[in-house]
Length: 131
Image (tube, rainbow, N blue to C red; front, side, top):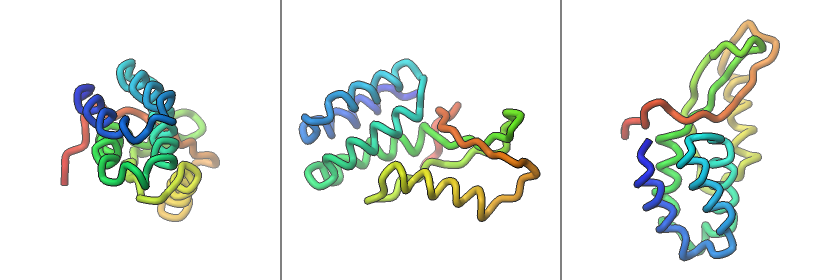
């Protein structure tokens, strides 16, 4: 995992996010430990919600890092992996809207023989390739 690029992304946002120090540190800690990718996404949305107007394009490297290193994993009730979906963060979207969009994607555009589908964030084994 490219930890140097997350450091750079966080450094770009930090001057605009004095009120988000805990979220920045939590996000960094999760990346360095390679654990709890959901915490990374939650922290991103918290930071975004507070500094988007001030930071503007300086948030893009952080957004791209998350999109390249984290994905959503769909599993059935027996924990069998069904699919991995990219994390694509929409500008102006909050965590609630993102999660609802991911759930709609599974409900409306997929057919699985499972009664229950569980969605979780996971770190990618390999970063996504730029399109």
